[in-house]
Length: 455
Ligand code: NAD
Ligand code: UGA
Image (cartoon, rainbow, N blue to C red; front, top):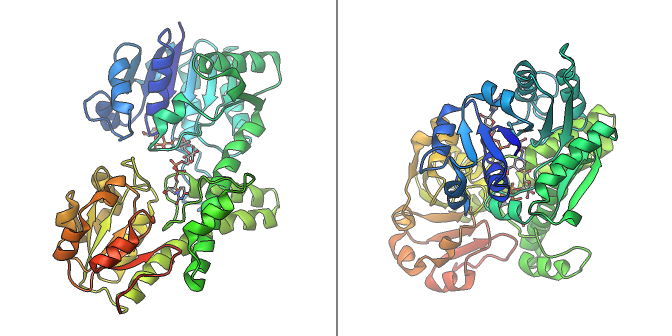
């Protein structure tokens, strides 16, 4: 039996450790966090995050071989493996502000591990970090005078929210990077042994530390680049009468391009794409690669353009004013099947419409509490309504911003009757049946398609 500790009980720490606990019943897994409210929620019937399949998995393992605690120091002392999964947000101050990763939580964790360790440990970088962060971690940890040696291994996480359990149970690949030293290779093998309990060995890739760290940033940059690319094409479709769904289908059938991750949308959100690309941009600038930095930064700029374009399209369709008009946002989570609203395009659209003095109503099955918290003072000017029918009643327009499947199954005839006419639908995810909405009487604006309007 090994003692596995995860520091950071967030969207990554919670689900990844629940899966490890279930797949490795011989090991004891503890997840610690400084946030007492979060830990209390992990110990309760209302987990702090919504993720399909997670409740059952936590219920099956909690207090058997999966434990949640705020006693960080004690559990560090007992651990053999420490996965570090703390947040690494974009720096908001000083050098690199707005781009570089803020590594203060990371460094505090390293020092806390050092203070509380009396035995050697394998420390696993699970958080997404700038390239060569492992070097800093090794330097801090191995600066002790007790003769303790710590191996630092990189094991970036590739799960996506909304499919976290499925992605962990059946990953495309697991990546483990380590030093090419006997001790580094032993540490790497120990992590391989954990994953190979359920992941086929050929899907576990081992590399050097820096390739592993960089692969994580590069993977997110490539994924986000696909979305910005199709969104750029969507703008051209709207000008030319082409249909972005048809274009995506046609280009995705080329096996070199592939069909996935080509859904044009109001923009990509989530806590990582923007942060990780900006981090990559900062690294390129740091190494004097300004052309490379500009290339990747454009992916983020295109995303901001797409969000702004969506709001401009709404304004011009609604006679250039939304002041005093009730507008209902269908969805505020950054994608379907999650309660997470971090960097959600719906929040950007909400703020822009509030600037225009619209009356905003938001409906979402799981994300209203997070949206209220994220909007801060602006939340006072927004109505949060879980029932989509009540939310849409009396509205001038619906803006669909999260691709929750239940939004496609609503009774739009009834919704149309309850709205102010002309009634507008702006489908920011292209999931609705636009032609049938048009026949009901709606004026329909989708992403990358000619609008269907009655006047
Ligand atoms: P999160 O904010 O949900 O969770 C991080 C947790 O770490 C918080 O609960 C915070 O209280 C805790 N924490 C911070 N400092 C601590 C300390 N010193 N001791 C104990 N706990 C501490 O973040 P997240 O979404 O889980 O992301 C964590 C990391 O994983 C980030 O680097 C992120 O880029 C990366 N990542 C995230 C995802 C995702 O889908 N969210 C996927 C892959 C990788
Ligand atoms: C993303 C990556 O997919 C994960 O592999 C990675 O581990 C994670 O970031 C991370 O490092 O945090 P996530 O942000 O949870 O996962 O969700 P995605 O499915 O990638 O969606 C991101 C955003 O892009 C969402 O707003 C989604 O709606 C949008 N999107 C996605 C599109 O607009 N079009 C698409 O075709 C796909």
